[in-house]
Image (cartoon, rainbow, N blue to C red; front, side, top):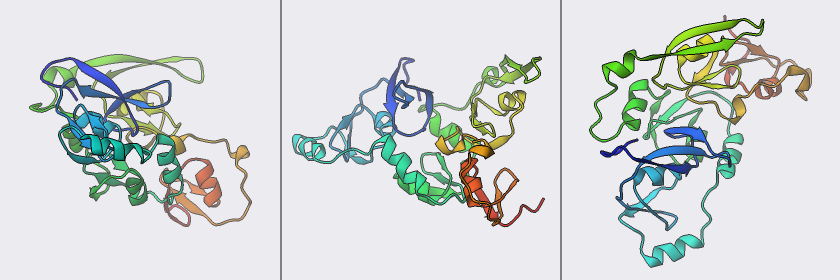
Length: 252
């Protein structure tokens, strides 16, 4: 997000929402407008503007700064941490039934959305248009023709040692690859030869694990993952960091 002035302020955020990097504490960094339009969070803390409050994953109490009574009450209630969010998500079912929230953030299922304290907008992943609008500053009418046509050279070293060069757009539309890495867009992912796992940046459970390291029994209760592969049982599905599409073998 950008304000009418071009200066922006980097603030730590607790959710992967409109962010552009990782801090040393493994918190993502949000680009927020350097403007003062205070909002009071339910934790009794005053935020400079809506962006900083949303990036801190705090619900709105009211517009304007918090009063001293609210600040004192907020100190008595611990603010949810990034770790507590991950712990909540890890308790959710692994079934992949994506849902888009009102801030254009896609969650794996309704349980994860509720862990993040969000309100659902509609079933299914958020559309690129919704994400683009949510991340846009006030008065923004979309990327310019120059932004849409501008490309950059991506050079990849393949397993064989050979180098592959691709011309990819500079517009960011993050996707998670089957290798557990987040790519700027489909072109960059394809250039690296990674299959797509799901739209949006990768999360903790997306990192692949070697099969021999999976502490699973050999029972055969097949499940089909969102990657189109059949896994021997739920344990293997979770060990590989893949979400369940449905019970039984994959149809294809």
